[in-house]
Structures are given as structure tokens and as C-alpha cells.
Image (cartoon, rainbow, N blue to C red):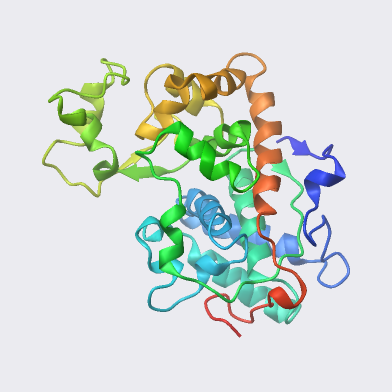
Length: 313
């Protein structure tokens, strides 16, 4: 595995965050997170993409403050985009252990950020330093998730959404590369296979030879909840085959395939192909994750350290 160490200070620390934040107050914090993620992954590999997606959805709503974890009516957790996210039990397990080892020290927001990194590591991906020092938010509203990127939106719309958080086009492509692990439901892309935009034909951007394979997995009137790998042929490994699939017209979600068909993002996808593609993606994904993890970080009295991740103190 590749350890990303050579990042400038501006990239590994942000609003109150820094690498090694708990080195004195809870030196075992990161090892507890990693061992717990590893343990749960051995029993249920699906927690890895779930934890990665959880971090993304948390940061894009109210900032990276663990507001996605709060239980209750009309909280972020209850919103449609978050209903299929898994891995909450991992965060709860980590928090229980950390409260026993270092009561009131480690935030749930930092647990989510560290667990996302460790989810990449357990799927044979890269390793990088995660800045910590976030505090937990006190507000969680389902309505605030309306701004999350949607799989049917244009690339221009996605670029606007990412730009609002200081993330550029390269960050967009690199972060969507997280779809190299995980699955999606037939109901979220089946429209591409049969009656795309009212044409009674498949989406023309799909490789024609790939259409029958997808139709066999997702019949027109079949089970819409059936899960399909987002990265065909390598859905359980963090690698660059996702981008090869986009080049070959084998992206599953419409928004994923658009990364290739849109000229402004295709150039970035091409950087992740070929002999140097893996190295380019590793470095840029880690850098983009650090940037994203510093969105809207709360510090001081703007946040708290929850004793239980699912409830405000």
C-alpha cells in the first residue's frame, strides 16, 4: 500500500484540524478506529463503501460534523439519499471503545473521517494522513440533503456543487472514483437500459455489448432493489478499473459515465488510465479527501464532543 506523506501543510490541516491531533490526549484513537473497521470488514465487506459514502454525505451537508449520525425524525439520516448508507454500527462500536479509553476526547466527526480512510485501506487501496480536531455539530435536518449531487444531474451542475465547497474539477473526478468499490440498486440506473429519455432504446453512451449483461442483472420489470457493482469486474477492490470502465462505456450510473462523455472531466479521467494512472489517482484521491474532510469544520464553541454519536449532548 502506498502511504501518502508528502503533502503540504495547507493540505493536511484546515480550520482547527491537524495530523496527530490526539497524539497526547488519546494516542490509541487512530489504531482503535482502524482495528474496528478491519474487524467489521471481515464480517461484512459492504461496510467499506458505506463508510466512505457516509463521510462524503456528511461533509456536503452542514460540513464534516457527524450530523449524518444523529437519530430522530427528519434528521439527515432519514433523508432518501442516506437511507442506503451502511456502516453506522461501526461508528457506534468505535465510539464505545474510545469513550472507555479516552472519555469525552474524540469527536464522532473525526471517527467518520478516519473510518473513511481505513475503508480504502482494507479494500487494498492507499493510505494517507487524516487531519483531526473536528467537533460535532448540533443540527441535523433532512431538508438540508437536497443539495447532495444527484446521479441524473449534469457535470456542470456537479461542478457547481463541488465548487461551492472549494473543490475543483479534479477533486470531483477523483472523489467520484470512490465508486471503484460498492454497489447501487437497479432502480437507480435501469432507465438507461430500456427507455432512455423516451427513446425506447438504451442510453447510447453504454457499450452495446454491455447492455445485455446489465439487462440480465436488471430486467425491466425485475427487482429494483437488486444490487449491482458500480465497478464491473472489480467492485471489491479500490483501484483504477472504474475509470477504465468509463472509457469503455461501462459506467453504471449516468453521472459516472458522463465523466467520460463530458470533455471537461474526460481529461482528468485520462490521467487515471495507463501506466501512471494508478499513481496519479492515488495521490489525487488522497489530496481531494483531505480537502473535502476540511469542509465546514467546527471548532471551539461551534461544536461539541458527543458522548454518543447518535444524539446531541
